[in-house]
Amino acid sequence: MGGKLNSLTDVLKKTLFFFEALSVAELAPHVQRKMLKDYSLPQVEEKVNLCLRQNECFYREKDYWRLNLEGNKENDQFYSLLLKKGQPQNLREILKNANAKKRKVKKLLSEEACLINDGRFIQLDNGYWGLTEWEVETSHYSLKNLIIKAMKIHPGGLSSQQLHQLINSWRNTDIKTLESVLRKLPYFEIVGEEVWSYNPTMRIMYEDLLKKFLNMMNRQKIRWHRNRSHWQSKYESMQKHYQEAMAGRREAAAALAEKMELAGQHEYLLTQMAEKDLLLSLRKREILRYREHINKLEAKSNSILYQCRLWVRRTKEAQEEIARQKELLAKNQGSLEGLFTKLQQYKEKDRENKSRLAELKEQHGIRIAELQTEIVELKQKVEREKTFAIIEQRRMQDEINALSNDLKKSLRVEEEQQRSYLLAQQELAAAREEHEQIERRLKNPLVCLVLKICGLFGKYYRQSV
Image (cartoon, rainbow, N blue to C red):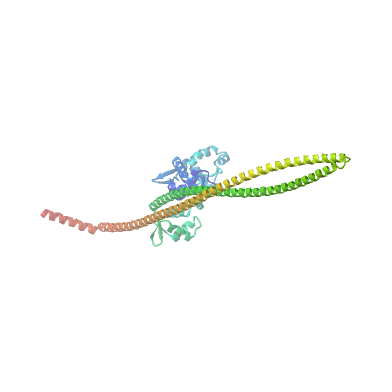
């Protein structure tokens, strides 16, 4: 049968036709595997329940839903037509192809709305209609559900070999996987020698217990994730504190580098001052040499004045030259005074730099001491948090071990109750067989005659007394 199923109703028809009776909780996983994959399991259960209640072809027996295969009598003609064709048909094409018998065909075929409410028909996504009884795709159902289907067909029980042959007619399976599923699930029971049976009440109890255990594990998982996020935030805060400490350490290193740079600048200034002192000493020597030269010139001019007046012009020129030398000397003296003032200013700046360097040393020592104390405190806090985390993890592991032990105990108690239930059933069957044998013996005509004679003798004896 080509094409996919059209709606949720058709998927439910196919599933209930194959399994005969299922609850909403059992139908939801099949529907989610076939369609509605984006929905969660509770949402799928809600939609399945709504569809089952709205459609007339589904009816309920206790907690299980079944498919009504009787259908509407108006659709019997179309049902027989599909049986003859053996493949899906389009209702509109049939109406178009019927020329002379168009009115009769319209009377025989009902509308599509009636076909939707008929459990015998399913609609495909291409608009064609088919029969529910045509080839069921068993590959969409799990091996567990196929085993339950086989057990429901044979309520007296089946051996593993018979079960393997029956399921192989639906889907190729391995006998080892089949036996592993039978031994894994507790609601598959061994009745006799290698004969397996299905216990639906045990399945309900097992699924309820499994849901409770999964809910408990989910709560434990949420609590673990909450604790993990809490410790993660604590770790991030400690990481931030550590980064701040490292930033302080980098600032201290920058302050040390600045201090070294200032020391280098100070040495450079000292070298410059030494060079300037050397230049001043050279200038002083030049001035002294000029003074000696001037003295010699004055002595020479004085000796020339009283000896020769002819040399007046030369003397005047010499005097002018002396005047120029004097101006140069005055200028040199002014420059020396300026240099002395600059030297005083450099000395004052040197004192200020030394005082500032001492203050920076004190501040740097204080800052390093504070950072060291903060680093020690942060390390102690990290160690305390680690110990608290280890203690909390051990406590949670103890809780998980205790819960798993309780679960094992409850499973043992259930196994013991199941054994006692089986023994009680066997004793009841034996008592019924004994009761039936006694009734058969009492139905014998000789026994009835003896009982009547005993009754008569008993009446005669009571009358005589």
